[in-house]
Image (cartoon, rainbow, N blue to C red; front, side, top):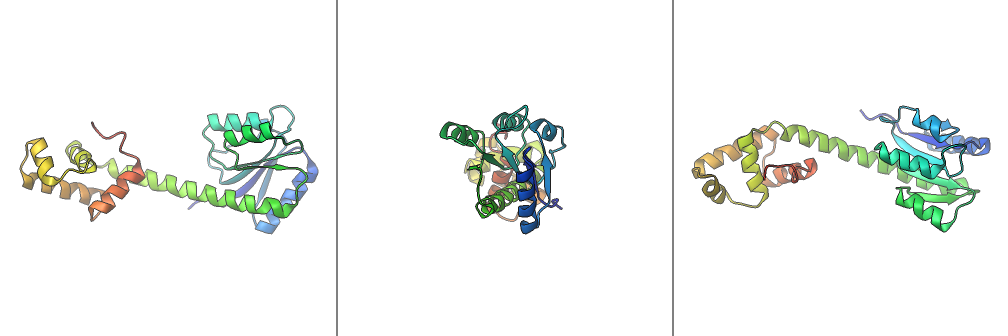
Length: 208
C-alpha cells in the first residue's frame, strides 16, 4: 500500500511555516518542514510521497540549486516554488527544472491549495504508473528467449504465418509458442499483450 502523502516545506521563514501547517490541517495532510535545502537532502526522501514546496531564497543552497540536485538524484516529488522576489528569468529557470508553478509571496492560501492538490494527485498518478511498469516488467521477465523472439515479431505487426516463415518454423509451432507466451504473462488477447508491452516500455530493449 502506498504511504499517505505529506507536504514537504523547505523555508526558513516561521510565518510561512505556520501558514503551511494551517493549509496542511485544512487539506488533512501532514506538513514536514526543513529550514534549509541541505537539511532536506540529508532526509531519506527516496520513499517520500506528496509534494515539495521550496522557497527560492534559502540560507546556503538556494531553491533552484536544490531543484537541480533533486533532478540529479532522481527525486520525482512535484515541486512548487515560492519566492518573495519572483521575476521572469527565475520563473523560467524553475519551470525548466521541473517546478509545477512559481508563486510570489505574499499570496493568499486559497491560491496555494489548488496547486498542492494538483501536485499530490500528480505524484499519486506517477507512482501508480511506476508500479504498473514494474509489474509489467516482472511479467515480461518470465518469458523465455524463444518467446521473446516471437514477441518481437508480434510487436512489429507480423502475422503468425509471417513469423513462421521468418523463423523457419511451422505455423503450428508459432501458434503454440504464441499461446505459451500469452499464458506466461497472463493475457488473453493481442490487445492486452500490446498494452502490457507498452506499460513495460520494452520496445527499446527487446532483441533486434
